[in-house]
Image 1 (cartoon, helix red, strand yellow):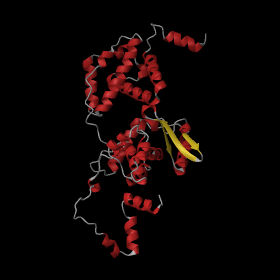
Image 2 (tube, one colour):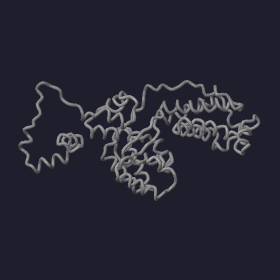
Image 3 (cartoon, helix red, strand yellow):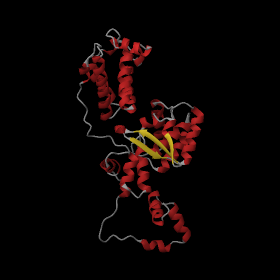
Image 4 (spheres, one colour):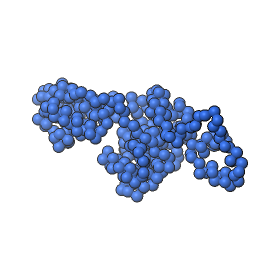
Length: 338
């Protein structure tokens, strides 16, 4: 019998209650269904024990697993002060699933400790997009910070692909592929749905620079803490008004850019967002329009287009070059240039 088989048999004996081995087996099994699920579960479990026990998972002993239900509820309330209700519900759910397994493995715990009242998720937190110009400005200001090139490249990849943060963190060099001379990035997205996005040759060249700089298997080595600090830095240095800017804003920005380029083709927007239903695209990305997008509806309202006749050629060109990108895109589409 092989050494590996010996180890498995030894692990499955009732006397072996190594906590980390048990949790790792739970996570490894979750990863067989979805790598993103494993990452999410591990993050939730690590945060819980760091907060409640001040320990990494690898250092836990069986006594560290024992809690009272009021202690769990206290943790639930504390993280709700930092995260939206959906995130809190997902974290408690991940912990409960882990404890179900730990209970199955014979550890002296109860999964019922985590049977808590879920938070209402109807008040879904809203994220606002950044403009194309703001994203360029973001990359420029990040370039002056520590690991600035890698941070800016992550922003650029998020904007180009509309991939979720966790998916981008898990990207490897094998996820960059060439099909018929065109570069693509691929990831296993939400719902275990494969997502392919075209990237420009220029972005590919920048990614290859990153590969020379860091090596390794993963494209990005930025931790969640570094990414959160990066987002705080962006919000402190760019005036977004009352808009709520998060990493997910880049996904919205990406879909908005596709909308602009395709003259709001819903199928293209749905594909960019990797949405299973076009309803998601409509509800999340077209439901809110800014006050600037509102138009006057009145039978006597007439556009004074005769004002264009009063402009010289140079004034018209200057007006077009200074116009909103939406207007420029529509005009270029009419010219057949896009």
